[in-house]
Amino acid sequence: MLEIRWHSRAGQGAVTGAKGLANVISTTGKHVQAFAFYGSAKRGAAMTAYNRVDEKVIMNHEKYMRPDYVFVIDPALTFTTDVTINHKDSTKYIITTHMTTEELKKAQPKLEGKEVYTVDCITIANETIGRPIPNTPMLGAFMKISGMYDMEFFKESMKRVLGKLPQKIIDSNMLAIQRAYDEVK
Amino acid sequence: MAFDKMELEDIEVWDGNFAAAQALRQSQVDVVAAYPITPSTPIVEGYAQFTADGYVEGEFVMVESEHAAMSACIGAAAAGGRVATATSSQGFALMVETLYQASGMRLPIVLNLVNRALAAPLNVNGDHSDMYLGRDSGWIQLDAYCPQDAYDLNFIAFKVSEDHDVRLPCMVNQDGFMTSHTAQGVHTLTDDEAYGFVGEFKPMNDMLDFEHPVTHGVQAEEDWHFEHKARQHNDLMTKVFPKIEAAFSEFEKLSGRKYNMVEKYDMDDADVCVVCMGSSVETAREVATEMRAQGIKAGVVGIRVIRPFPFFEIAEALKCVKAIAALDRSSPNGAPGMLFNEIAGSLFNTDTKAMLSGYVYGLGGRDLTKAHLVALFKELQANVDAGKITTPLQQFIGVRGPKLAYL
Image (cartoon, rainbow over all chains, first blue to last red; front, side):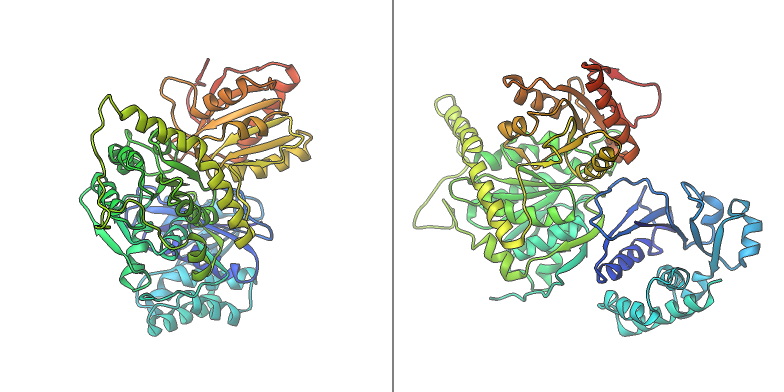
């Protein structure tokens, strides 16, 4: 079982990102689950979304999770929420920030001693998609860190997931995914 | 046909709401009248989108309340069409008066009830308070545990509800958020397979058949009211089960997926078991398997058909078990929980002398964790080892503050 927790603000696309990732993984024959805690469901409110991936049918519907990966797609959430809650020793973090990994760990001591990767998904999204929607770049970074799929396969799959959007938006998302893949450290 | 078909993947990653919306599209529902409410909104939103995009030859009626939504559904069903809607919680509560009209007038309407807590305090998350509120309303009530079930059970619902020997409305319950907003792989039927299973709508006593005028919704005082109600109850008690069995069996032939009125999991040799509904059934199954690795013979019984209540099937499922936990996701407010009472009633006149204890859990969307279930199975095993119930009969799972227990 692979488990992922997303930290996001409502409106930044964590639910869409989690469902998109589930969609891609499902085509490879694995079983998936994607869900979220909406809380008060107000745009801008801190929220979490979740992925489960397994070889067999996923029957566990508890919300509690000890994640293998934590994705933080809004830079401030590293400081205003506990992104390390329910962590394991092996939990890997991919965090959106303009800082380097070392600077981030210094600014947020809770991340000290943890496997942390950083990438500026907000800037990437602004420069490619033209809006601060950091969900697809996070998936590009995840492909790099996890080595889950070949990048070409992943991008082709994401083109299908984004299918109904205008071509320009699909193209800019592909650029964002590739940039995050290349830039995550 | 005057509408477009949709090509679906064999497995689509859908949440329970979208799965239900797709089932409404594939069933070619003629009329949906709805007043959207969280967390059921995407079901009627989905149907409206499909209709606007030309995938359904139907009509979406916007109304001013849930009371009006069900009233419009009643009108459309009496006129003679395939009718469905969706609601949750407060909206369902406002519908209650009209629910009894729908069943009393013997109108086949499918209501997707996305289970959510009832205020106060206001809460949009999932529990079974609304499901329990409707349990005496004369509707057939089915329960989905995951998005796949929410999809499949809609087809079953139309098939059974519209049968001329039944003609009773049907609710399909699914857990708010934990099923309705959780995306999982759903094995799809093609549009032709799905519609072929549900079948063409066959009107009965329809008001638009001007050659055969009928009256709906009449007054019947002391002289006839009781006979109407008794026959309605009789049909729920005697005519619905065989039709559900037949529909489950036909659906299995079509899809390979087998549904049962009572879903037994590892019950053949179980010493201890949990009886519950909704997404908790699946979590409990996973924990039961893990308990067996620890030497506790655990099983799970899920209720698939809540109304009519499968009285004898429940007794049969529980006949060999030694300790039972009845899990109610609704506050009984001054009594044992519904499942506790129903199970006790099923077992009382049998030789089964299993120990039965009740638990209230998950109100307002409170998580039922695997750790909770592990502790629960251990508590049941302790009852078996002691030969008596070692706890009060009614407890809470996962509530903070000083321990509360009764009876």
